[in-house]
Amino acid sequence: MDERESIKQSMQELTPKKSAMENPAYKVSAVSIIVNLALSLLKLVSGIIGKSSAMVSDAVHSASDVFSTFVVIIGVKMAGKKADHEHPYGHERMECVAAIILAMLLAIVGVGIGVSGIKKIAAGNYAELAIPGLLPLIAAVISIVVKEWMFWYTRATAKKINSGALMADAWHHRSDALSSIGSFAGILFARIGYPIMDAVAGVIISLCILKVSYDIFKDGLDKMVDHSCDSETEQKIRDAALNVQGVQGIDDLKTRLFGDKIYVDVEILLDRDLTLGNAHMIAEQVHDVIEKNFTNCKHCMVHVNPTED
Image 1 (cartoon, one colour):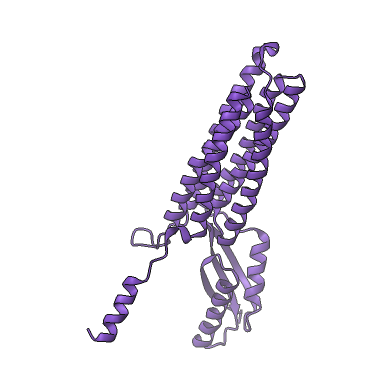
Image 2 (tube, rainbow, N blue to C red):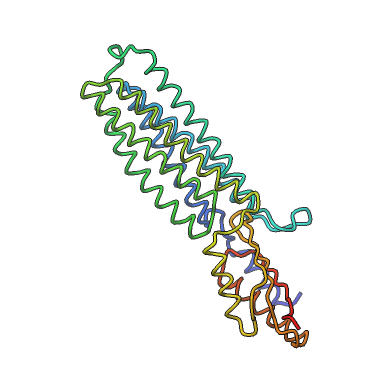
């Protein structure tokens, strides 16, 4: 090894490698964990001191966000693995698995909160229910503001890197904001003189959580079972292919979601008198145009059909 190569190798060893935290998904997840831990503690303490079952339920919901964020981190990390011999198409669907797990966790939390509230309502001892203090009301306002900000912050990053698991976590933040709105309303009415509203708020919170969990589950499942792209995206793919000079028509177009990526299979119609080389060149142009214009396209397969004689 000459002196130049030796210096180059030494510089490479001294250059710090990019840390995992430079990944946008990991940065958002780290912020999410810190925020949720702080909010969970705030809600729990205020709920216990202020005697609010709705706020305690809300604290449990925020605590579940911490675990769900770890699920997102694992899902994103596994989805980012390169293709190997056993998984030649990559690991993108691991994000779908993470999203489905998140949906199930949300559903469990929602059912638990709902059952607790229904039991209190069914007991009928409304006069014996404790009237919440002012502290849970303040905690609810803080939670609404912080969680709504976390929703938009996480959602922006999820759209930027096209991450289904991170988008699911964003909606988890939104569901927590909705929970806090329900808590605020319930606590406010309970303080006015309707203590049963604290329990009613818990039931409303559970319904919001269950709706969000269903939407996340459906989206993850669609991406797991090779669901096609929406009609608008497919039309844009058709237009892009037809704009390539020499393409006379589209005989068939199939798309399928693979995690947060899409696969495209398109059959183009070319003049039957073209040479094999020219037909191949046009097919390559169609392939390149589609993969360039649709950044989430993992692979495009182009098949050439000749025009009728």
